[in-house]
Length: 355
Picture 1 (cartoon, one colour):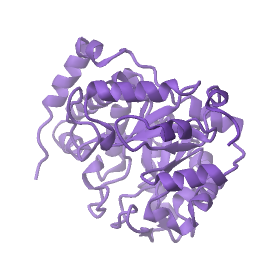
Picture 2 (spheres, one colour):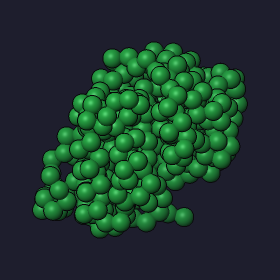
Picture 3 (cartoon, one colour):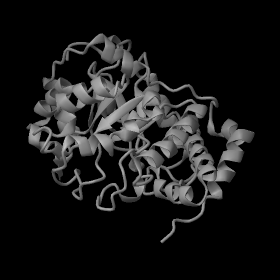
Picture 4 (cartoon, helix red, strand yellow):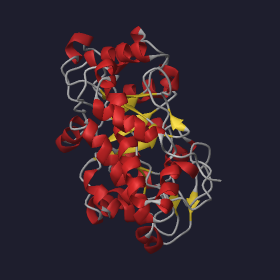
């Protein structure tokens, strides 16, 4: 790259989201995050040791670029929650909210909204813009990787609870990302480790798994993440590399207008598309606005060196719209909020998961 870091500071957000190795940025990471192709950073548990450290890390990342890079995290609740101590509340699995629904619909919706508010407000108070939540996959009882991350088997119940969670996140100033389109809950295989295959026909998937995206929550999603799953009776490509699923169905029939994120391109479920450059090209051609490259800095560097995408203005605009609107400047101000205190109390009262 010939341009200097100073030249790169004022750049539109690019189509690549990367991770960083530790709790502070290295010089190499600072330079990489100033690459014009980069538009965001995804954080993991390894990037967190405490409240002050996380706030300092996100502040440094945000200060690198104008507009600031989007900082995201997989922070759903239950077993997928990257930060759990020192300023963060342990959140329940989404299945627990689904179990509450069976006892009291109103209490379950109130609890889901409170979870969404606590989830988003705590992240925002530490400088994180976006969580890849909620999971809209249905709980068929067969998926190893989804399991209790799902709200419910019934698509209408799942959609209603997800809508309440998303409303709580919006109350705090954060958008939400539905995943994994068109549905990962039916297949047993884990796409982190292998390429799952779903042999159902389109109508079955449309009527069940896609129903939550056609629910009113679909109009409020800031982003959608497709599944690294092949639906053999519909398309030979995994959904994240399929123009049919992303353009014809998600954009066309569902009418989704937000950001389409690829799932992590280093996952085994993405290997069918080729090397990292081929995977990024295929995801972009299928309709993804932003691609994720996680836990492989060597592949991230390779992609930045070799990829020369033509990023459409509307795609850049969708990515730029992801920036959050936090209500509190830091975690201390959040702790003093009566709304936050009440929401935390509601979350604390959610019963343990039923056997």
